[in-house]
Length: 148
Image 1 (tube, rainbow, N blue to C red):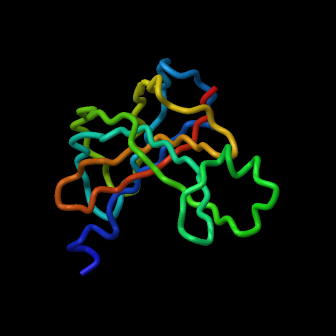
Image 2: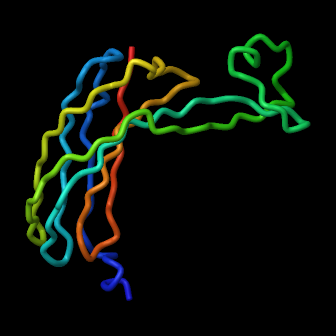
């Protein structure tokens, strides 16, 4: 069963080295595809810039923005929650086979959108890479970056 679903298939790692980058600039990340138990052809990589923002929820279920929660005299009844959105997505054609036990290193340039928020306690930015591999559940990996 596991084999038919691609459970022992390729794995994806995104190496960002917690890079620091400005909004509107490009960043090169290394996507590493590690071979599974059988050969896999990486047809493409779906690259995404994900932004997660923190907000707070009060006892009545109302959303309180992070800036308002920071000004509140008591945050005891507030619970933190995160919303995530895809700020950018593009497909990189690859067409490379990865043998069992080997790794393919794929450098990819990705642009950080202008609307991306600066990272901090209330904002996290992640680069996500999803490998398009036939006859396997598409593996993905994430790497954090610091946006100034």
